Image (spheres, rainbow, N blue to C red):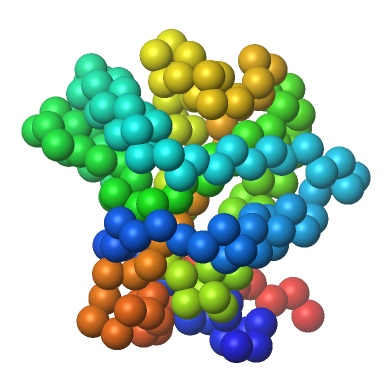
Length: 197
């Protein structure tokens, strides 16, 4: 698959088989993230790769509790509102049961933390598509980076005290009829372009 095809056919996958992924495929995806550009070539984005089922389950419980305790305030953007509503109903699994969760983190005081990590996450999603893997950007741990219980658990998994969670990526085999990630084009009604000629 060429680069433009990998970019233009990338779609989020939220239904994945629980089957583990071969380490070599996960490593390829991570290497794509590590190759992403960073401000001043700082290369400070860190990747915490969680494959242990017990850790994924424990995180799901902590995340659900944290969101269930939040108020549904007016003006919340759609995905955060969904996380809170689903958590209040119970049974919410923020990582959709994917076998791999890659958490990105960076120095909290670093001004390019989010931009650098966003580049890394996008690289990983494109690489996953090229490898016929499903992926989806997961922001719930970023929203909860300062929640005491979630933070303590993540620090036990390798998050450093001076870091903030900048995002996450789930990775797995797509649970689709053909076993491939969804790749149908989506209509583009936003992201306007202004030309200055």
